[in-house]
Amino acid sequence: MMKILITTDLYETKTNGVSLSVRNLSGELRKRGHDVRILTLADNRDSYYENAVYYVGSFSLEKVYPGVRGSIGFGESYIKELIRWKPDIIHSQCEFFTFQFARRIARETGAPILHTYHTLYEQYSSYVISSETISRFLIRKLTKWRLKHTAAVIVPSRKTERVLQNYGVEKRFYVIPTGISLEQHHWRISQAERCAMRRKYGITDDDFVLLSLGRLGAEKNLRKLLLYFSHVYEDAANLKLMIVGDGPEKEILEDLTSRMKISHRVIFTGMVEPSEVQKYYQLGDVFVSASTSETQGLTYAEAAANGLPLVCMRDSCLQGILSNGENGFEFTTLEEFQHYILALLENEELRNNASEHSVVMANNFDKVHFAESVERIYQSLS
Image (cartoon, rainbow, N blue to C red; front, side, top):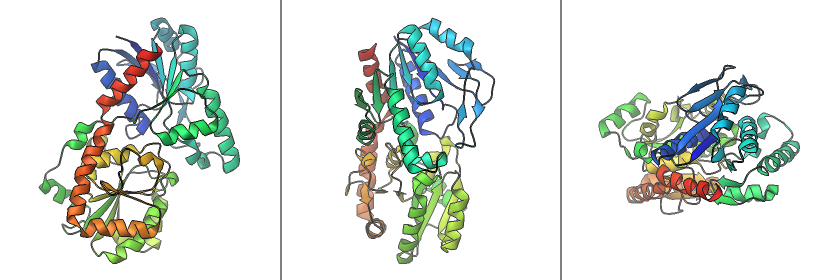
């Protein structure tokens, strides 16, 4: 049994990939008999403790980025308590505020820091600094400086490893895709419920639905997806696009669909509860994405686990989850996107084969295997 401290700026945000990863990992580690504690930020200035989670008081940084919070000088008593607890290893999940707490506890206890690098910040820098050159320079410097204090780094894909190596980070890297709870996504809704939910959104039994699910941010490249869809739908009278999620781009995207005169073919559902998300995947016939900002794309794995063929913009993060020609297709041009969508729409056998392959590919992302792999790294470092 090990004493494991996980530090993360994000924990309560249920739809965020980092918080999902922390919840899945901590749950599986506890099942394996480990004493796991989590240090995170509260949603206000009051610090408190609940169910092995230390919430440190924080302040809003909403003007910098939606949902982000910061903390300086809060939760001193909890930091001291964790130092007295003396963890065997500290697993940090974010590079900003709780990383400072992780460093302090590591200095006082001698526990090594294992860090998971979840986010490619260059894709989000426009939210903070308008100059791309300056923002990239600062991100590279900050990342290299932070990670020099770690014993090793987990990355979710080779893509992320290459980015960090280009930053000049010289650490031992472990490539481990973040685990998801496959049980939820292996459960299938009935045909009657599927039809009823589709009718709720104006989808008929004959409609062929392209599904996009995730945060509606500029980095997700949804404007390009809408542009491509506007060309394809002219060739298919029963084609619709369902966009599941919310974010700062929602109004912009809704206005764009209106100006492109495709509002009658595009459905915005808004945010859905995490416990309901598998139902929405199953309303679609094909999962689509034009994003190149993902470190690994957990929504791709979830969509695959729900049996959807994938049609995604070519990106190295797709390695291990999209096998071109088997469970879907990678595209780089409008012409390729059109060809693959129409092929899946018109060829039921191709679609069914891709669906079966998707379910098999998704097994690589099982949270049990994820926890086992991380546990082995803990043991090698402690």
